Length: 629
Ligand SMILES: [Zn+2]
Image 1 (tube, rainbow, N blue to C red):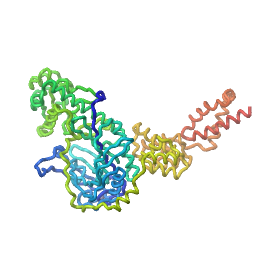
Image 2 (tube, rainbow, N blue to C red):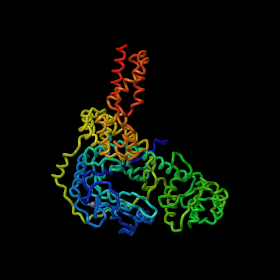
Image 3 (cartoon, rainbow, N blue to C red):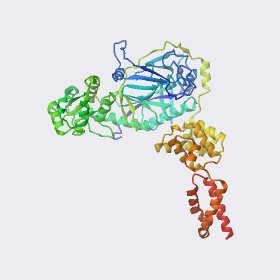
Image 4 (cartoon, rainbow, N blue to C red):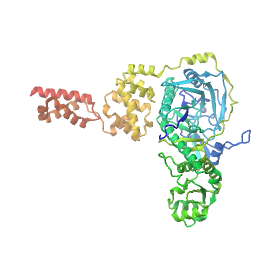
């Protein structure tokens, strides 16, 4: 970041799925199972609050006019998730998990648990609300010497899983709806992005050590509130990977800082929003003869071209002080979120087949001066709401960063997803009686409070002979349980098992392969083959690649790759033949002939024989030859 003095405030809210056997308010198991057996279609409709207001975020979703389709299978969901049956009593194991975490963080546990309903607006819950239970308040997280205040600890139900977003409907699977989550809100801290990542890591580790946390991608999600000094925060929802956290924060800081600078620049020019941002003007007529395919297509589909003049904005839309931080992008992504096919601003014209003659005609029609800019939007007349939201956003360019809900793009950027909802409206869940938290329950949970990470780490290094890096990696890994199982049932070296389960898998997923297919059963088979000597450790990574690419088992991969291992006798003969046919080399280089000969042999047997075995046989064979000469 160029401006180091510009501080960001960051608040983390962590959602961790709990591995407690069944869902929060019914007996359905926790599993991904989206084979559709039943299908429900519903529309969500906005209603006014007691004060006669409609939440802007609710309107945003409603405007899209999309149906919600829920698919479910009775193996993973029941009538509770369909909202056709009242919720069952709360899963007390989930409550115990939250109390355990609360004890570990020194939080105050509430005396009574009240299940509440929190409005959900994006269709991800069949009821239109999410059930949530506050379990504890306050507390402190100790993250590597940094103390972060804890605000609240709650248990809540996970949302349905979005599996397809179509123009006319969103399709959700109900398998994830109702899965228990623990939600921990940390107070905003002023810290650099890397430190925030450390804080999230420390909290994630604490959760994993309790043994209640589910492991694997998608089981932990972070919402990050980010604001620069003096401005309201933007919320980036659903960051799944830890290493994205610092990138997301840096991007948001740059983006918000740019918006702040734009506002300052406009003020310096003596401009104000009302006189600078014009009204929409229908300029469709000016494009009757246009050679632009983009515009032509839109007109053929019954759309119109709306133009809007912005006094004093020339050059501001394309200004890019940091990578991918532009006012033009800001508006375009917002337009897309509202279902408009993007926008065109004058800084980028002529382009998209829009000629300089087209540009001149628009400029004349809208009275766009030398230092002004204009924006063209291709939209239907019924897109009035979206258009006015976009104009509203243009007016806000004079205010600096504005609060909104954003989403991670996956590459460390963020993009607009919807307006910030109004104050969270919660009301009691009347189907579930309140639950008293007894002293006995708290005492029972005290047994689960984990030891500090560093102690557990040391034990692990000792028990398995792992170095610190590997021990950290395997303790953080989704495959910890598998690691322990393989170590206790095979003679393989724990270091080798840990390397395969952490570094090998990271490497092949960086190569772009989908490792989600590698479930514990498939990986366990691979280790068994390795243990019984049917494959060599050199071939493991190729077999993993093949398993991901082809979606087949380890033993099928061995056949596919022709990795049938060489028998002891075959190998011994091969080593013998290689030494004999290189006799003169051995006689001149003596023991030093080992290197080149080993290279030759490994080229022939890589993946089919263990390197250590080859080396042992080769040394013996060289010694024998030298003895006889
Ligand atoms: Zn159920």
